[in-house]
Image (cartoon, rainbow, N blue to C red; front, top):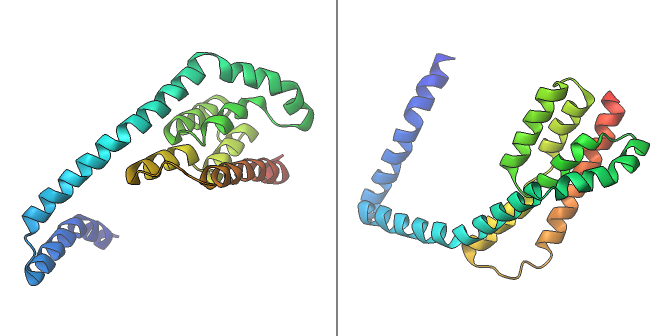
Length: 176
């Protein structure tokens, strides 16, 4: 296992050296290309900032207004009827929006109910079975300037819904 540590220590300097050698071979001014790439990175970051800021403010308003708790309370009788814990609803709502917020919720659920509890297993499975669709669309579409996203949002959210339903069904069948 020591050789893995040695490889991981030298892999990044090796890649940089390889890039510089290829640049020398092709007679590309490596430093100027690096500076131009940095400028493009800054332009992309400044273009993304309004999209990210809008998404973060929306999430904060949704959570701080109490809308999430109201929605969860509204659904609780139906969820209890079909055997789904209402504690998992905020995670299902936030996961397509923010991966970091969803990870925080999953951590909190696991700390509260335990990793081997039904809720802990369901939260973990749901975390791995869904994606941050709105974040991905915001960042990637914003980076390249796409305003009309077509069916990407619908398909992404449908995939998240299927991931949530599959998580509930599989965890219920295996651990329920």
